Each structure stands twice: as structure tokens, then as C-alpha cells.
Image (cartoon, rainbow, N blue to C red; front, side, top):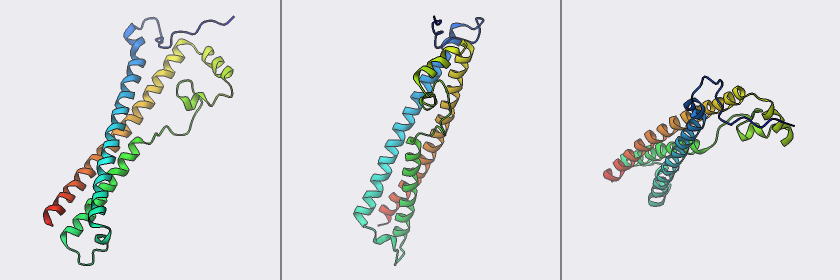
Length: 176
């Protein structure tokens, strides 16, 4: 007969308090919320940037790309489109998941499916001590934090290039 599973948030030692026990769950929930917020903001940035590019192309067509008589408004439209395009690309990069190559593990779905069968996965989970399971959870939180930091770096770049693109776009509209 197998022993029952330890509680999923067991602290590494009995000297830990309940706030230690609750920490991985709290951290994972917090990180996932931040990541969802970044994805939502990135979706808005991508939509707004793409909309501005569509407006430029719809209103002026693509003739301004040739820039035969290179007026300032044509240069500003090109700069605007470039920065808005970069903003949309950075925003898209925020949304694309990036966990890296799957490694065998107990928490992340890509690691779980590296086990050849559900029985083998269950056996590995059951073979772990409370400390080892706790360490797996904390390690997963660390991976999520790295992904979250990357998302917010890209989101920041999307915002900056979007602001520059809109500034150039507004300047082009004023110049016309």
C-alpha cells in the first residue's frame, strides 16, 4: 500500500511556518497574474500599433514608401511605420510563450509529459520527499519569474517604440 501524497505546499522542514508553506502558491498566482496582465497590455499595444499602420497604408497607400519627392511628411510616415511595426513585433513577442526546450519535471506541463506514462509520473511524484516537492515548486516559480521579467522588458520596448511611432505619426499629420 502506498503512502498518501504529502500536501502540495509542504515546507522543507517542520521549523517553517505556515507563511512558508503558502509561499509557492502565492508566488505562482502572483506571477501568473503579472504575466496575464503583460499579455493583455501587449495585445492592446499590438492592436493600436497595427491599427495605426493600417490607417497610414489605407490613407496614403504605399506610394509614400518610394519617397520620390522626399518631403518631411513622407520621412515622418516612414519613421512612424518603422517604429509602430517594431512596437507590434515587440508586443507579439510578449505574447509568444518561451519556456525553452522541455525538460523532465514534476510541475510544468512540458516536463510532466516527458514521462513515458502516467504511472511513471505518479511513481516519481510519490518517490519525492516533501522537501524535494517544495523545491520543485519554488524552482517553477523562479522559471515563471524569469519569463515574467522577459515579458515586461519586451512590453517596455513595445511601449517606447509605439510612443516614438505615434509621435512621428502625429508630426506627419501636423506637417501635412
